Length: 237
Image (tube, rainbow, N blue to C red; front, side, top):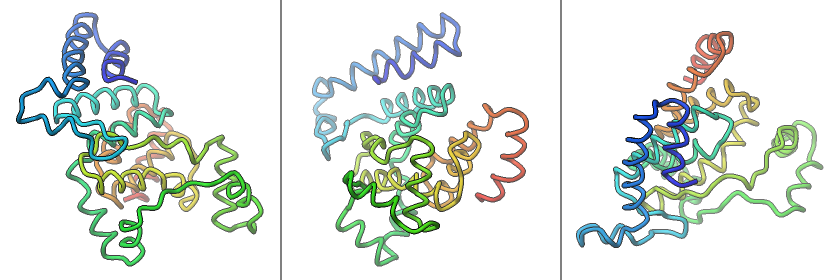
């Protein structure tokens, strides 16, 4: 979805016509600059050079628009993970220090950063998980994904992180998300997803988890909101 679509689509739900018109105009200007970086001044021309295959070079202002649009769309439909992914992309630059330090202080983490493996399965490898013993991580993970109709292959690529190693760490974090559901024995309801976001923020320091855990509960019905603050929030912290 384009930046204009993110911003104006969310604004239609929450803004007056006058505010919508203003937001759409500003968003359109930002999108024009985003799609034509070579038209900018020479001092910013280097921003038009992608740093990795899926990289979308952007200015801080453009990232702010992506983050705002993704946050609004995510608030409107918290079950769509693409909005949270875009929010994570646009807000994570400069916040990878905690994750990097944890990885380089561990032999396995250093190896992951060096080799940069990605989590993927062939059809045969995926179905082989179903044959693992009951109670094993692989068997439990397979059953949970099947039960919820989720595929490991649906995690979107990283686009707005301006460092190749940081982009890999965010992709690794994103690909591991479904593992947390299995390890923590949490399902995919909104309140349980918010609990995992708090857990991820505490473990990684990435602001997307904090943003989601602050604003996400506003959408919860009263009984789930009470359960989030009385049980899940203290547990995750």
